[in-house]
Length: 183
Image 1 (cartoon, rainbow, N blue to C red):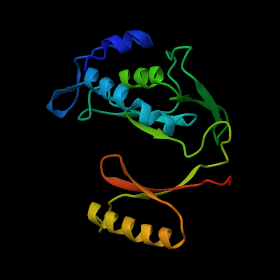
Image 2 (cartoon, rainbow, N blue to C red):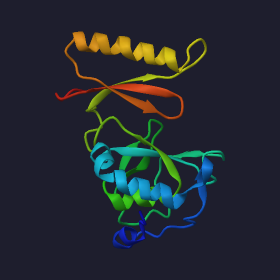
Image 3 (spheres, helix red, strand yellow):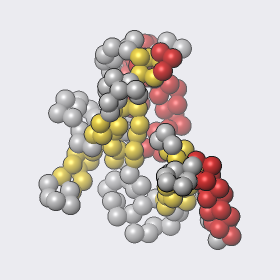
């Protein structure tokens, strides 16, 4: 699919579209095309959630950095939300509420999206519980999978729905939706 027509309608400038970001030559343009295709399914899960961006300006084999604060060059049309720092001051987080903002973030080589567990403005009201299972000393990804299955058994006994999700490059997460307001 050639995303250029849809990108024109979103009015987002794409820099270096042929730049490889993944092995085997997957380019920024291909990543942006992928984000456009999955946006109807992804955006409902991100809407209203502040995100930390994990940016890979030289692709996944290069250096990366986490970006919480909206960059100074963030367009005025990108929605943000201020979150107070524990040490004082605030962080202006990006909200990936629409395809235009998602594509803008992908153009920054934001290849990992780390959303909050709650939606703004209710920062004290999470919408799910997350069990983060990462390999470590004495535990590989298969161990994590076994723990996820045991966790699912316990959650099923408690009549709580749960969903597995891959996380990052090495682990997995088990999500339990909270359908009742809690703090």
